[in-house]
Every structure is written in C-alpha cells, then in structure tokens.
Length: 325
Image (cartoon, rainbow, N blue to C red; front, side, top):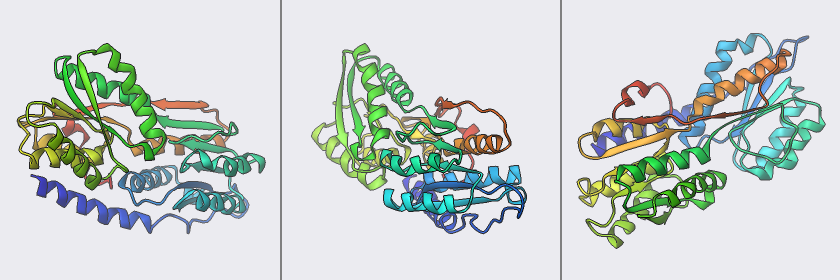
C-alpha cells in the first residue's frame, strides 16, 4: 500500500513543477480599466502552495479576471524576495494585492502597500500591519484542540501519545500546539510525549517517529498526533515498517492532502487515520473578497475558516485527484 501512496506523491510532485512554472503573469489589464489583481505567494516547492495557485487560478477564471482587469501570480523564495516582489506588484498599478506572507518579517514591506494607497487582502499567515482590507485564514488553534480531543477520547481518555512539534514552521506549530495544550488538562491520564521534526516532510517525520518507536516499544504508545498531512504519511510509514499497525490505535493529520485521504481508505481496516482540514482552496474566498473590494462591495474584515473532520467514514466525499494537493 505504501508503494501505491508514494506513486501518488510522485504524480503530485510533477503537478507541482507544472504549477510553479505557469503563473498567469502574462495577463493584461484593460488599457483604460482598473489595474490587475496581484497574488503574492510562496514558491510552490510544497504541494500546499502549488495548490494555492491552482485554486486561485480556478477562481480567477470563474471571475473572468483576464478580460476584466488582469490577474498576476508572483512567488518568492524568502522574505527578502517577497519584499522586492511587493515593490514589483506596486509598480503594476494594481487594483488590489492578495498577500500570503512568508512570516511576520514581511510586515515592513506590507506597510508599503498601505502607504501606496492600494487595498490588500491578507491570506493564511499574519503580519503586524493593520492596513489590510480583509484577512482570511484557517483556524490553527482550533485544529490543535480538535486533534487533541479526538485522539485523547479515541484512546479512552488514558494512555501515551506521541505529539509532533515543528518549531521551525513558526506560527503553524505554535498555534496548533497551543490548541493541543488547552485540551491536555482535561485528560490528566494521557501522557504526551513530544517528537520534533524540522519541516513538514515525509523523511523528517519518518526518521523522527522511527526513533520514537524504538525508544517506546510495543504496548507503550497508543496514538500519534501529527499536525500536518504530509508528515502523517511519514508517521504511517514508520509505524508500518515497525510492524505496529496493530499496536498504535490512531494517527492524526491536518491539511487536506489527497495522498493522506487515500491512506485513510487504504488502511481503513488496519488503523484509524483522520485529519482536520486547513485546505488551500480557501484562497478562492480570498480572491472573491479581492474582486468584491475592487468593485466597491463590502466584505468581512476578518474571516477564520473552521476545520472539517475527514476520516474513513466520509473520506470518499473529499477525493479529488485533479488537484496538486
């Protein structure tokens, strides 16, 4: 089964490379009409970010932006690169900028958008600049709370649980961990054992969980909390290779990755797998807000999208192999 999953991963990597190269930066705005909407996002080396472009492009097509004002998609590899791209976007005389920042260090550059008098939509991550017209994101603390509660209840309220930490991912780790910590006091008979990964990748999670399972032999770990679907595949691989699918009761995830969805189905009779969504398709709502703002319509200043539970019982409703995530 793992070979089948890894074949799916290879397909997704190919799709990622395709989307990384095909941003609509050849779109032209009308000569006398409004300037383009510009989406500034992260270099899609991760499939989640490749999917941001995929879903943004779907929404741009739905809104017919090419024939109305134009749509440009620019990616950056780090904070400095994104800062320079903000200046590039401003030079386009945009109607609006949608910003998915690398992290809060982008704040000074984001302030230049406000200073230029250009409206902007802040998407996914946070910057300390109050000038945005709308902010839309998922609910990372709530994801942490729901993952923890479902896991702790799933093992009967007592036992030992490995919990992923990934401090270098910044706010994602901090906010999901904060949510987990809120639930921990409600289950005093659950012992939490952290394991650390540097990134949300399969090899990182595989290596970390392999070591954790060696240190905690059969019969001593009841469940594993992974806070990212890509990591979850590495966790599952470690559990399977250790021969402990009948030992570990459940593994969590977060995101909404098709590979993890298929794992839920493929392993449904061996181990309980689940996720809470933090799906890149929410960029479509950010794009709608952008379009509405440009056209003088009011939008909510802040929108936090709650997570959805996906597990073996409803995963078939979430299959969509036409997306890069």
